[in-house]
Image (cartoon, rainbow, N blue to C red; front, side):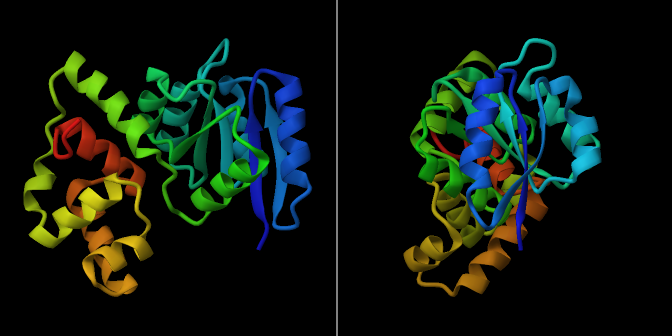
Amino acid sequence: MTVRVALVDDEPMIRRGLAAVIGAEPDLSVVGEAGDGADVLDLVGRTSPDVVLMDVRMPRLDGIAATRALVRAGSPARVLVLTTFSNDDHVFDALAAGADGFLLKRSTPEELLHGIRTVARGESLLFPDAVRELARRHVRAADPVAAPGLARLTERERQVLGLMAQGLSNAEIAGELFLGVETVRTHVAAVLAKTGARDRTQAVVLAYRSGFVPG
């Protein structure tokens, strides 16, 4: 099945480069482009992408607000944020708004393609060290977010969430805990249900923002 990708960046040359790399892959297709976050809802409505590559900084409506708008609208599209710096506070805000991961604009073509395919599969694309540092700054600047759902997690579910926050995939978590992959999927689903997280990325962000995972 072909993964449909929409590009949202205010720099035409960057969109052109991304389109060239993505369009060369037999399992990926660029279905539309926009130069500002203000056009995202219309773009997604017209093209029904599986993944939206979203610049975090744009002149009229930034990637944070555009991501939030997509989530509010109930769009099933996955959002992969593009940023220049991994320590950009806007990245954490975008993840908290509903983005499924982030990539640096200086990423290699191979890293870009891997990122698109990863979030298209419903997995998160997080870099634990970068997210930990961003979360540390956010929690230090404000009170930790209350997350009563975390108290309802079983000990095994807490272990699974901790490993998710380290960036481990379901298969890697299964190996770490000596469980079957299907069992891990069941635990992940329980974590999402109890915390009210939309997906595993949001669960990881919540784990950091609440102090469940130490910064």
